Length: 207
Image 1 (cartoon, helix red, strand yellow):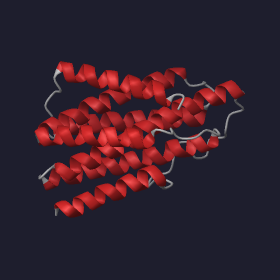
Image 2: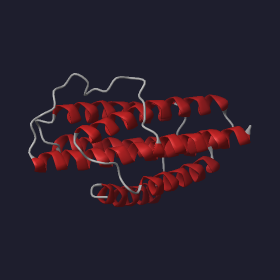
Image 3: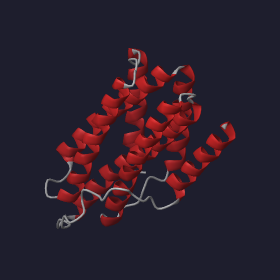
Image 4: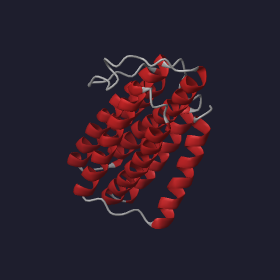
């Protein structure tokens, strides 16, 4: 059983980092005409979508690690279902990067490894602590996405549609974690998570 879970985790890592992600649901950008952006606007949109793509790489790592560790089969299924929705996000952000002529972060393997380690540690504490970490992560991601909605070029309707849908989904994932029994993350851990997220998003904006 554990060996099977390790193999599944390895498969997820390889698909996340090296394969072209495929979504089950069509992108919210589908059917929206690409805006006539200036070079600076296109670069800005690309930078924000690269940051969002990194967030989805980390989401795959977090959910996969937590699903690997938990002994609760119902919770495992819940985590894997959320991971599949996050895979849609990964595909959508990848598509936007291509449309904008930008590339994913060069540090994605590092981001994945770090998030996988954090997810494993959180899950080792307890299932409820693991869910609390999911809730806090999704809340912080939702706040980042709102800031991107405020800063993306207003005429880039395709990117805005993707980010808005992602934000709705992340908020739903946070609420589901609470319903499943999440316990709040201690304030020092929340602060540390914010610092780590700041480092990641600032770096991924450029690299």
